[in-house]
Image 1 (cartoon, rainbow, N blue to C red):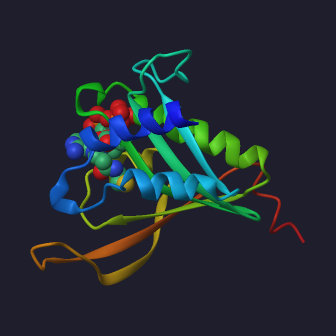
Image 2: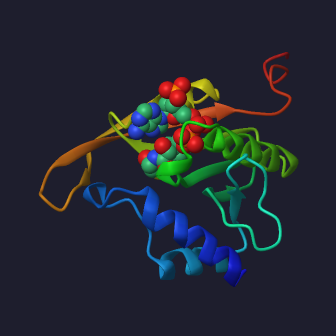
Length: 160
Ligand SMILES: CC(C)(COP(=O)(O)OP(=O)(O)OC[C@H]1O[C@@H](n2cnc3c(N)ncnc32)[C@H](O)[C@@H]1OP(=O)(O)O)[C@@H](O)C(=O)NCCC(=O)NCCS
């Protein structure tokens, strides 16, 4: 786990622009991973799970609840972007959520983050907006947008 914490933090420090204040500290990540329902995913430059000592190019953190999961954070090192690593992580975490029996994944992002295109390509759609939810260090306020993605064997829930 410590090795993987190192891998996560190496990506964390490279991937998140401090302006947005989104990066988690090592302590925050370590504490969250002590929770039994928090899961992490790693991908190398090819999108595969890194083996042995290989570094990670990207990571994702997910919180699982009965029937639904929440993507807490996803990041890919700048030099590894645009190669499908983020997509591989989204597929990896959706497959794991489905295996755990979830039928929806939620996430929250700041308004106008270009990551929205990626989320939409993977089936996430906006379901709500919290006005002025985020406050940046310079006082700027930003809306939060909640997205949801249906996974697994859907389409039979409304059959009755
Ligand atoms: C979002 C992120 C994880 C995507 O990783 P990635 O490996 O580049 O993802 P993929 O290669 O699978 O997909 C790339 C897509 O991401 C989207 N995207 C995300 N951020 C983008 C940005 N800053 N500029 C342009 N496109 C961006 C685009 O839709 C792009 O698709 P395109 O190449 O067809 O235009 C990565 O950009 C990142 O770490 N960003 C900073 C952290 C962040 O904002 N995380 C999300 C909020 S927690």
